[in-house]
Amino acid sequence: MASGKQRETTATRWTQTWLGGAASAGVDLGTPGARLGLPKEGPGSVATYGRRIVALLLDLLVAALVGALFAKALHWSPGTRSLANTGVFAAMVWLLTATLGMTIGKRLCGLRVVRLDGRPVGFLWALVRTFLLVLVVPALIWDRDHRGLHDRAANTVVVRAD
Image (cartoon, rainbow, N blue to C red; front, side, top):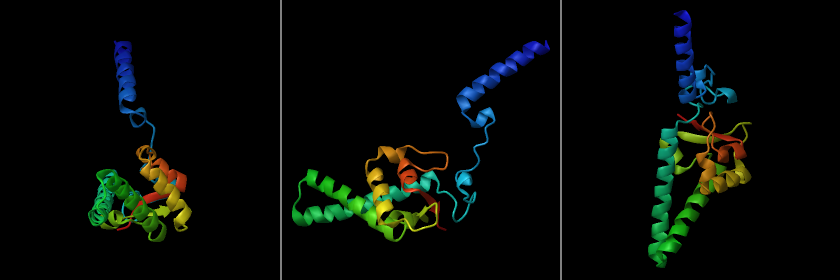
């Protein structure tokens, strides 16, 4: 009877491990940013997905509005306007991240981009990060510290500023 119960527990555990991932297998993943020495919550902690997505949407909206102003003033075609929106977004993200460590959307959401070594992001690493962000796919591949490939390449992390 005990061996039948033990076999059932083993089968249940295997299923839970397979479906639940590493955490259900007893692997302690810690909190996002713990491996990087960042606090669990509050200022300096890793930004949540929700805040990052809202900040990105706000930045895209600002870029679209600026691109629309250029398109209207210069009578651009829809294709040219689309490229202009992408260009405005890339320039805005690059320059603001390099100089202030945050974009307009990140500022409104209480976020900032910081380098792990404590130095300013700077123009070169902000350019690398922005290029990979505009490619989209690298930004969609995240690690357990909520860092996309664009952040890993630039040795940056998005943290809460407030």
